[in-house]
Length: 423
Image 1 (spheres, helix red, strand yellow):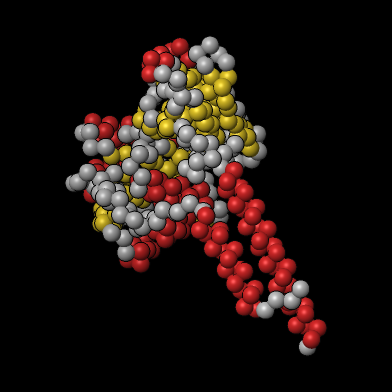
Image 2 (cartoon, rainbow, N blue to C red):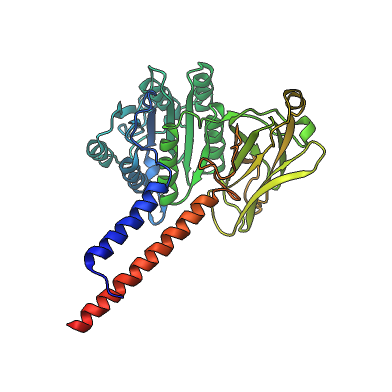
């Protein structure tokens, strides 16, 4: 069969119309949310030790600059971002002067990417490591308003300006109740640096990450900046139990905890009839770990019967491994039955990580647990539903679209062959 170009184009348009018209509408990313613009202050160590060349064959400073350029290119439009330095200006030996060496390199506000990159390009490893004063300065940079606020500290060493303990500074910031989170990243850290940066992060509900490669640095900083744009992702610290009976009761939200290597931890969630429990967990490898690892998330009844599980495994170096599950609880037949049918679901988080003998296993691995309770869709084919076992309408649509596209392509191919033969 031979068809004209116009007919082929019309059929292609029909297929596109079917595919676009029947798919659910997609939210526009730039739609206004009405929330205050989130604020992030990146605090970069520019002390003399940043000259060390041990990150992918380049200096720590060069790796940090490369990461900053990549991060600045990817900063969400709604984020107000600033940059503060520590140890960037004073090369001398006067402790009093060196421990005041922190300044705002780029003010917190709407981002001019070119201007910010130009400012970062001027940095050269110079002086001391006044982490405590830098954190105090960053907290001042972020003052005012009700926006989400986050400090991301990147350093390669522990503070050199005692007795102003940066961990105590972080605790004081947390005690002010200003909802400011400090995340820390250690560049090729030693044990002392790791302990200090972990303490700073934990004091404010933040995270600590050990970094040994440039791509790890840019990826993690970008993730933290993007996280600041979401007001629901600041985790609430909790502590899982060794058994369900002693586990903390969780409501919908994001929770942080630490889990020992190969440990099981339990949490509890109450699920009402007609609700669907959605849970996910991420375990971070914040230090060197052995190959072959995994994470398991199970939902079981209080009597130990497994309801559903999710698991994920890997082989090779990773920063984070995640898995999730869903459990829809059926509707009750009456209001009285519904009141009596509240079900306590026990969530078990297990990890299968191990580490070389030279790696410390304390503190435990950082985990983030997300819990959500939503109304179960009345109709399993509801377009709002998603996940395994649902959304067959979408699968059917994709099959139909593929079939139509294949027919059109076949007709167009035949037409092209016919034209070629006539020529």
